[in-house]
Image (cartoon, rainbow, N blue to C red; front, side, top):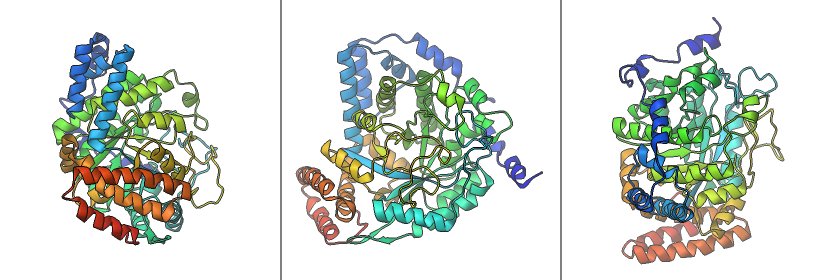
Length: 494
């Protein structure tokens, strides 16, 4: 037995699956989901408005309600749904857009997924795992040149990037501080996208300074999942992956992120399954997903399925997916990535998206390499929007949105159930506006080009007037903090 096969053999802990099963069955019933979709009828206006009122009250929809909303065709009602989705987003998250950068740590993988450029049998892929010194250089570029405050660290499923490597890389990232114009740049929150782990490893991950833990099911449809993840690979175990969030929450990780890769199977089934997943977590663990992500399948090196999937999602259907999830799971953060075009990301923000990446490079080691271009042999898929963070901040400001670099909640205990209660009540968006403004001012002073700074200050003035009007008692203390940021103090939060 090789070291790699020995590592694979001890990964899955069956007892950490069985404890969550109901008489040997999981909570995704394929036939029941399809029955729910097929029995739904196009709702009348009164029914739609009743469902929307539930979303606006930040209550999770029932599966039959989501199935009904999927069938709405009346243009007027669709506009009401869009308005409600944006109102939900505004109520829960205000008009903030959170930005981050993905940092791919390596592209070795023991799996052989049909749609992925990093699959084990792809001999054309240029394999690499970043050293700690390389991670330091990548972080210096992200935090010191671009101004990112949070990243999503992405790890392949391989012994070279196992839990010990993950923890060491997180320590390395958090240790980096780079002098800027007026202060210093650093990464203040590391979210992790990695393979499913045991409760013991997840406990270590939490203690290592984790923000959100992401594991995407890819597809919830059992037959399709088995078809795309060859038997005998780690990823072929549907249940080990499905219950990753259960184990994470049991291990004390407060914030978990779920998602599917749209294009692997019928999107109607997948959004219903995402809702079932949220309901399951709420019922069994007392808290739903902190985020839902919306990756859409893109061409990948040597992947015929990625090129010719019968379930490719059109732009219009993709926007409908985002709209429906915002209404169905109204409290959750929603992430769209640079897989999409600039225009699609603009449209998606109007439908309730709350987070997106910027200045994105997904080739291993690309951030610290001057002039590096996209290269299919180095990255998992090709990007649709490679604009810089500065360009996105200006774009958002021109649209009337503030870019938030706030990570205060995670250091003040506003995570897990606490933040979920605040989100459901609509209080979190207002509270976080204060820290969002502080971090936005900091970023504008340290990193913005003149045009972006001008656009940012315009929207910032509107935010200040709103805070003054809605929180007159708290405004003086907040403004003192803002003045301290303007004078060069950094990482202040209320």
